[in-house]
Image 1 (cartoon, rainbow, N blue to C red):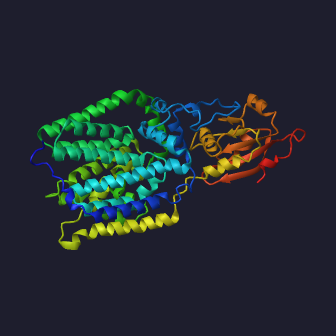
Image 2 (image 1 turned 30 degrees about the vertical axis):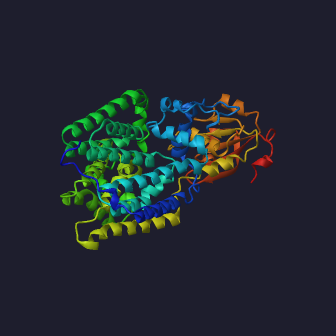
Length: 525
């Protein structure tokens, strides 16, 4: 039973066959854009560690390999010999994310394999499912035409395309956020039955256990329940939220506590000593346009007008359109939480689309809403937004995915080593552990039996003695040509190869000509 002031869904009879046909065309366009050159750029550390490796359930083991010791045979990073998927839950110590994405990705990888295109396809599919659910939800609140415009914006938005082409949890996060919103609306429309409340609670838990930055969006939806619902519906929904959060804390807190030290150290790269409250607020103003177009390189007019459409107009035109509140609270909760986080920690995470990505379904629903003008003029702004998003999407399609570094080329260059040549991996000031280079190598050159070594500091005498029996070794890291002499005294470089943002590879021979040999044929291009 629902209260008299509760919003009522629009009858599904208003949705005709041609609406579904248009949705199918939009899905085809969205799939084509997302699938295009999906394997063109190699994985980068956030993918082959934060997604691929964590999904194997091995936890911290790659970061605990003994430095300065030759490992022969080398440990492998892929699914072969990996622990079963329940180990993922208890082996997330080195991560800064909850486990749901890694678990679902593991199930996906067990079916479709570990190739880049297979792993990234999970994000593509989650985004396309989100398009369908967004259309179905918006057509119930605002009609099928508005639903199609929301789906079109989701198909063409820059941030949707970018995140769909990476093995990261963000499209799954947006889908779970949308499921939470839909479950809330079902309670409002049809009453707080035990079944609907259970689905709402499960959606809240799934969203919260996909990414910690879901907290702001969930808070916004909770405020919506407090403002819009009445009587038993309000009380039961709030109890459901509290129970879901309590259950999540009970089942996840011990492992969250293991991660909490990482939450600040792994965000050091985003520290901005110039950050001020006005600058952070300005960045918050630009969040809506950032998801439709580009980061902070868009025209000011587009940024400000999009912010007005999202932040202000839903409240101005709220009379008779109470259904807009759920989307508005979702957006405001997300943006406000990131603004507060950045303000307290002097970071600028709000400047990256992925950290506010959960708000994208609500953003598209708000922007698809017609203005209260008669006839075609009411649809003019949503139509302009779709056309402008299409223009930017076409430019993004022509340019292809953004470069994340030539990690694949680094791995393939290291594969030129002879079958028994040791591979020495060393760290960088930005990425830290040498394990990142080894994960890249093992991902693109699986089943290599070459001995490996993690070298954190200049080689000790004991380390040099281990290497003395080899006529050549290979150094892999940020800039081997520059660092070889410092890290490995007594060895001289041959054939260095550097790759933009991915590091480099250099073959090293012993400096003593009496014991050195010519480079192996396998090492030559």
